[in-house]
Length: 468
Image (cartoon, rainbow, N blue to C red; front, side, top):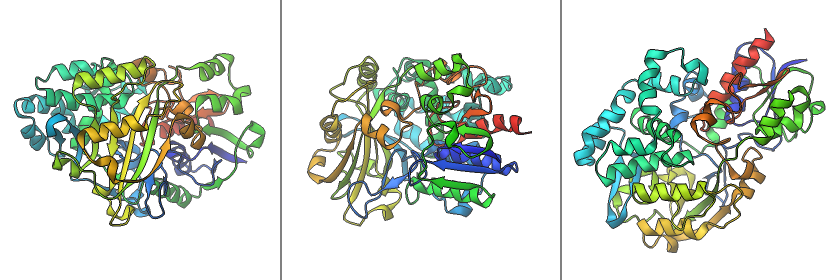
């Protein structure tokens, strides 16, 4: 009998498996696909020799993860590739906000808002390790550090709108909007402010790097370390009921809550089954992976050095677009998240090729084709971009879910990102324990979305109590 089986091999599943194996337990990871990695995979989606990241592409919370940082992943091939500029925010008339690793250099570019930017992010940048630990801890555990948590809570429990109101220029406010819009929620919510604060701090403290060789490099490093601890990985085997599992003392699901119920609902209480099946739905994404004839022809040349570029205009425009999306509408000018990985990792494509990774948020249940609107937003800040497109992989919410069942309705965040959606993700008390010997370790548990492994690490620590 195994001590533990982990169903699903995304970063959280592998993090859970490593935590258990490192504690001396016998562990097997079982993955339904023929390849491991979940959202951290890389494939030739458009053309031979052009390597695209299937979902996650930029990893501020990967390099900043307290758990990943404790592992010798560099010894197993993981190398972070830093772009010259972590992220930029394109504005009309050729203007752009550039957020550098250096807090001082960023402040210089923000003019009269420079000092306010430093006051907002500086204290957390200088105390990044503690900030990261608190931000990625289970909610009830974080309150055990009241003094350290107070400063984070005072700013992190403010809305994105409140953070922007601390700044006076449209340029700086736009940069806050781009950060807050990662939340896939209205910018006037508390969660939007917390996400903006965390991601902005990470840009200065640890950067927004790519994984050299693609997102799959993270998966390969985690898997190699897990196997060095004696762990086993089995692929190409879908688990549809408990009887499909090998004999094991506990099972951890790196899956969506509904998938966990469909397999192990008999071990859950009726309340847990109901909450897992009927939890609030989050908006999805519509994603384009594009191979081009070269770099994006940005109006502002400085954006050529930015690994990530936020497209959507000023604060009010982005706030309106995200508000419409959450309300069930498709904005004509959506907020677009774009990355250009060749800025940091040229080996992903031939010399004459460019790679563009871009997506926008779409309402729950959307089946709209957002291709033209995404390309239109890129064209707005890079006229002539469309003429450089050589080939494109287009995936809407249904396509994303077909590729990865965890992305229910194209939701890549594992459920809504809101204050309650994080505190009770998917339930307030014992969020990782789903039932008798059954645990949930996916991004649907605290601290939520992002390639950081903390959900799996915390779930595994909870499971270890059953294994003692």
